[in-house]
Image 1 (cartoon, rainbow, N blue to C red):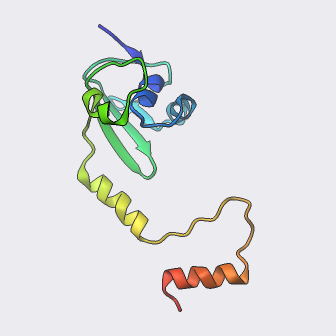
Image 2 (tube, rainbow, N blue to C red):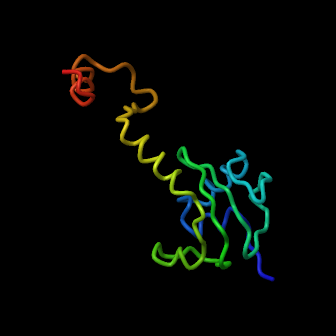
Image 3 (cartoon, rainbow, N blue to C red):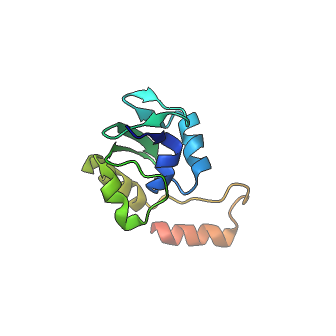
Length: 125
C-alpha cells in the first residue's frame, strides 16, 4: 500500500503554499489524523481522515489518492474529498464581513489621516 508524508501531501493538494508551512502546522498541533496530533514525518494512506486548523476554521479532508508531485488546482478534488461542514465556511465568510481592520506588525500607531479613513470605512462618519 502506498503512503506519503503528511507535510508533503498537504503541500501537494495546495492546503499550504510551501512544504515548510505544512511542517510548521504539523509541529504546532494544527494537523490531526484520527484525533491525534500528526508529526510532519507521519505517513498517510488512502481513506485517512485529516483535520486541519487553518485561518480560523477547521477543515476536514479525506485522502482519496496518494500523489507524489504538486498538482493543478483543478485536479485537487480527484486527490482529496472535502468533508468540512458548510457552517465552517459560513463562519469564515462572517468573519470577513465583520470588517475587521488589520495593521501590519511594526507599522506603529495610525496617523490622524489613517484614523479618519478607518472611521469612514467602518461607517462612523
